[in-house]
Amino acid sequence: MPNGQKIAVAGYGAVGRALVERISERGNDIIVVQRRKPSNLPENTRFVSANIENMDEAQSALAGCDTVVCAVGVPYVSKIYTTVWPVIMRSILQACAKTGARFIFADNLYMYGPQTRPLTEDMPVTDYGRKPRVRAEITRQWQEAHNSGKVRAVAVRASDFYGPDVPTSVLSTYGVERLLAGKSALAPYPPDQPHDFTYVPDFARALETMIDAPDDAYGQAWHVPNAPTRTLRDLLTLTAQLIGVKPRITLVSPLLAGVLSLFRSDVRELKEMRFQWNRPYVVDSTKFSRRFWSDPTSFDEGLRATIKFYKHAS
Image (cartoon, rainbow, N blue to C red; front, side, top):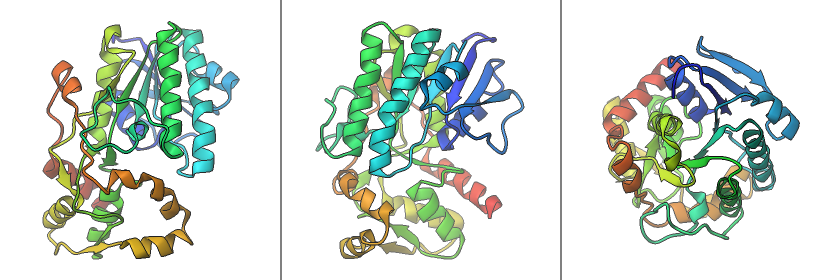
C-alpha cells in the first residue's frame, strides 16, 4: 500500500499493539481506535477515541480510512461475548461500507467448532456452543458484506496466542511468567495433545500482508502459519530449559477444574471450548503459505523473546 494511505486499527490489545508497532514506520497515516487512549503509542500513530459498538461513533472515527483492521478484544464472558460481537461487526462493516475502506478481521478459529482433522479455511462454520456459534454468526456477517459488494472483507485466523506482552496466553502467563518467578508451570488442560500456537508478531505480519494484498485475496479466510505443531508439555519443558530451571509442570485435573468452575467464571467459560484441547488441535496454513510466506517464527526464537520481555517487565 503506498504512503499516504490511512489505516485504522480498532483495538489495542496484544494483536493491535504488535500490528501498530510493525506498520508504524511505513509512512502511512495510522490511527488507533478504541475508547481509552493507550499509555504509549509509536510516534507515527494517532489515537481516536470512539466506542466502536456505536455506529455513529464508528463511522466518525473511521471516516476517510482506506483500510480498517479489527483487532478488538471482548471480555471472555459468554453473555457479553455473544451480545457484543455481532454489534461490533455490524458497526465496523457499516463504517467501511460508507467510507469504501477494506476490512481485515483479526480472527480466531472458534467458528469451526469440534473437528477431528486439521483445520482448513473451507470447513463449514458451526452451530455448536455459545462463543463458537457467535464467531460463526459474525463470519457470515463479513462474508455477506463482501459477497453483496458492500465491503471488501477478509479474515486472518490465528490459533492460541503467545509472545511478549500477551497476558491472556497460556504459554506466556502460565508458563514463562510462573517459571521466571520460581513457580511450576501450570497446565490448565491436558498437556499431551498436539496443539498449534500462533506467535503474535507472526499474526501481525500476516495482517500486514493482507493490508498489502490485492483485492483478489479478499472475500475469504486465511490461516496464519505456525511453527511445527508441539504439545503444551513440550513447550513448557522447552521454556524451562531456555530459562535454565527445572521443567516443573502442575496439571489442573478435571476434578480440580470442576471444583474451580464453581467459584471462578474464567474456568467455567473454558468448558465449552474443551474441543480445543481434548484432541489434536492442528491448523493447516497451506493456503496462506503457498500465496504469501511460509517461514513462521520458531518456538525457540519466540519463547526467547517472550522470556526476555517478562524478565524486563518483572
